[in-house]
Image (cartoon, rainbow, N blue to C red; front, side, top):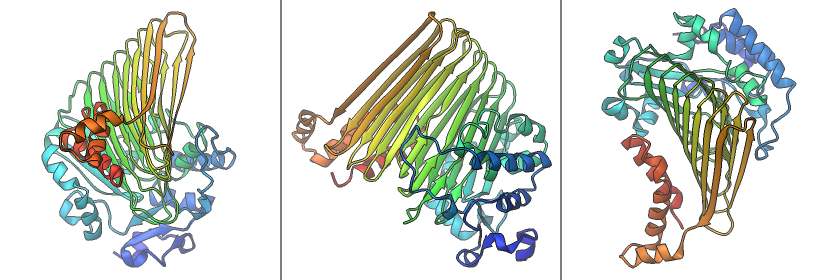
Length: 467
C-alpha cells in the first residue's frame, strides 16, 4: 500500500516524517490545533456528529484552566506532545500478521500466552491505534460484542455509541476530558447482552511506545440487564527523557441487576503524566467492582468515580499505589449515592519509598434521595523510609440523616520487629521487607486473576530492589 493511500490524502504539513517513517509509523506534528483535530477526524472516518464533537471539545479545552486539585503538572507542555501516532499497518485479527516490531513488544509482555490460556478475547493498542483484536468464537456466539471504538462508531452499534459516548465524562468535566474529546483515538467497545455471563475475562492492553507522544484511548463498556463481565486493562510504556501523556477515558454502564468487574494494572514509565478519567453508572440492583494497581508515571491524577443511581446498587473499590523516586501519585475513588439502599466500600493501600509522594483522595456523596445508604472507606499507607510522604484527603458530603458513613485511615512504617523476626528465620533483610510489602498489598492481589496477581507481585519486588 502506498503512503498516499495509507495516510488518506493527508496534508503532509501536519505530519513529522523524519523520525518514524522508516520505522513504519506516522506521527502527527507536536501541538494541538484545529487542523490537527480535523485531520484526526478524517483519519478516523468520523461521522459528522463526532467531527463536530471533537471541534467543540477543542474549544472547551482552549477555554478551560488546568485542574488545581492534584500535584503540579508544570513539566507537561502540549506544544511538545504529538497527539496521534500510528503504524502503517492496519489492525489485524491474526497474531501472525501483526508487524514484527510490535509483535515482539507484546510477546515480551505475555499477551499471546495470556490470550491462549485465560482470556475470552484480547485487544492490543500500540500508540494511537489498535494493532490486534480478537474474540473467541464461543463468546461471540453468545452475542457479546468486543471490538475497537472506531469500528463501533461506524458500524452496527453506531447509534449506541452516539447515545453514550462521553455522556458520563463530558468534555466540560475538566481540561483533560476536553482534550480527550478532541483527539481520542483507539480503545475498546464492549456490549454484553441481557442475561449473558462471560465466564472468563476480556482484556485490552495499551502500549505507548513513541517518544513525546500522547495516548487517548476510549473504553466504553455496556453490561446489559442481568449480565456479568470481568474486563481487564493493562498499560505500559518505555522510559524517555521527555514527557509523555496518557489522557484516556473509561465509561462503564452497568444495567439493572448486572455485574461488572473492571481490573487494571498500570505500569507506566516515570516520564509519564497519567491524567486518566474513569466513571461508572450503576442501575437498580447492579454491582460494580474496581480493582486498581498503579505502579508508574511521574504524576498521576486517577480517581475512578461510581454513580449509584439505582436502588440497591452496590460498588466496591480495591486499589494500591506504589510511589517511588520522582513520582507524585494522586489517586483515590469517588462514590455518588443517588438511589435508596445503595452501598459502597473503598479499600486502598499506598506505598511510598525513595522520596515518592502518595496522596489518597476520596469523595463520598450521599444525595437526599439516597435513604439508608451505607458507605465505608478504609485507606492504609506504608512509608518505607523517612524521606517519603503519604497524605490522606477524604471528603464526605452527606445530605440525608438516614445514612451510615464511615472512614478509617492508617499511616505507618515497616516494623523493625517484623523484619528482625523474618531475618531470624534465615531470610535476608531485603527479602523480609519485600515479603511485608507483598503482604500489605495482598487485599489487592487476591482480587486479581492468578497471572495478574503474579505480575503485580513482581512489580512490587522490582520497586523494592536496592532497599
